[in-house]
Image: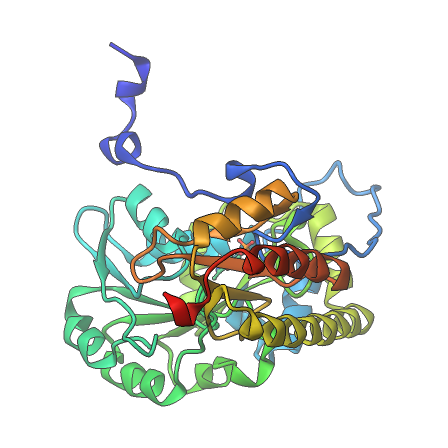
Length: 361
Ligand SMILES: *Cc1c(COP(=O)(O)O)cnc(C)c1O
C-alpha cells in the first residue's frame, strides 16, 4: 500500500491547477501567465524581521481602500487573489453539503479550490455571446452559496454586463454571495463594479497586485466586500498571511508614485494590445480574435496546434486553451512589451504564408 492512500479522497483524485510555472517550458519570451513584462525595483527594509508581521498590515489595507474607493473595513489582504477565492469557499461553504456556481470557460482556481475543500460545483457555461447565462444562474441561486463571475473574464477577455449583474444581486439578496473577480480591472477601470458594494452586502470583489501592478512574485491580493463578510473571512485567514517584506512592497505599489507607475504601464500595454489586435485580425491563419479587456488576447487560429508548436520552437511560451469547451484552436497571448509582440507577429507572419486562409477552409 502506498502512503499516498492516506490522503483524502478528493486530494487523491485531484488534478492540480496547471499553473504556467508548473507547466514550465523553455523560451525567452514568456507570454503564458498574464504577468507584466518588466519589474520595478522596490526596496525592502529588514530591521523588523524578528517580529511577526501584522495579520492585516494597516498601510496596505488603507492604501488599497483609498485606491479602490472603499472603507478600510471593506478590505481583506491575502496571499494573492487565489487565497481570497479559497477563503471565500472555506468561509461560506459547508464541506460535503454546499456548492459554488461557475461559468466556464473561466479561471480554473474556483473549481480547484472547491474540489480541495470538498465543495460541489455547478457549471453554467457562458452563453454564445460569452455572457453569464443570467436566467439559468438565477434558477440555481437556491442551490449554491457562491457564484463566481470573472470580469474581465480569463481567458475570453469579456466583461460581465452590469445590468445582468445588478438584477442577479437583487435576486440573490440574503441568499447567495456573488463574487466578481476583477484581477484585470486596471486595464479597464471604468468597468469595475466595486461602486455597487455599498448597495449590495452580497457582492464581493476580488483583486490582485499580480497583473497590472507587475507584482505576481510577491503574492498579494485583495477582497472587497461588506464589513460583515470581511470580518468572517478574517476569522478564517492564517494568523500571519502577509510577510513583512511583502507588506512593504505592496505599500510602495499603492503609494501615489506606485499608482502612477501602474497607470503608465496600463497605458503602454493597452497600446501594445491595440496594435497586435489590429495585426492579428489581418492574418489569414487567424479565425477569431476574442474580446480584449485584460492584458491578454485569446485568439482562435485555423490550426492552433501548429501555431503553438511554431511559437515554442521560436522560444515564445503561450497558453493553450484548445482543450477547453468551445475554445478549440484557441491560444491566449499575454500582452508584453513591443519587442515581445513583434516576436509573436514575426512567427505568425511566417506561419501564415504556409497555412490555408480562413476563406479556403
Ligand atoms: C491571475 C488571476 C488570479 C490570481 O491572482 P493572484 O493574486 O496572483 O493569486 C485570480 N483571478 C484571475 C481571473 C486571474 O487571472
